Length: 130
Ligand SMILES: [Zn+2]
Ligand SMILES: [Zn+2]
Ligand SMILES: [Zn+2]
Image 1 (cartoon, helix red, strand yellow):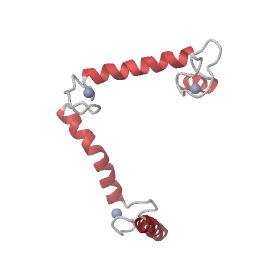
Image 2: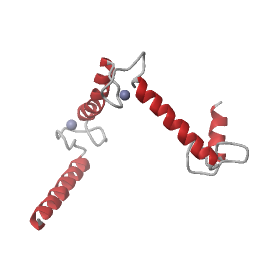
Image 3: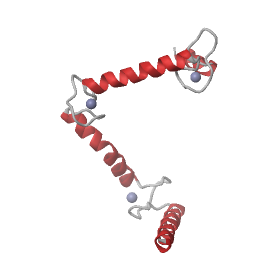
């Protein structure tokens, strides 16, 4: 067990050091090509972004709910009706929860201002946007 752990630790440090070395030289740690100051080269970062979003896009294109991955979605939604109503319910619940506790319903961190459902900072942000 101990050896296993040490080995893992070594691999972790090693790959960290390797990444840092590549980075220092301005090289992509994935393919070793030169990057333009970024962590990954353009090609690899594109690939990375693609792989992140393809699954989502595929489901969306097929009209499969991106939340439960089971049911078909209706209209232009990315969620099925069930998940849609669940999300609505969730947000309604949390809205009521924060409102009743007089906590800002936008950031959920600060105290809401008197007579408002938002904190001073969020009020200011909303005001500036409109
Ligand atoms: Zn690369
Ligand atoms: Zn669903
Ligand atoms: Zn706020």
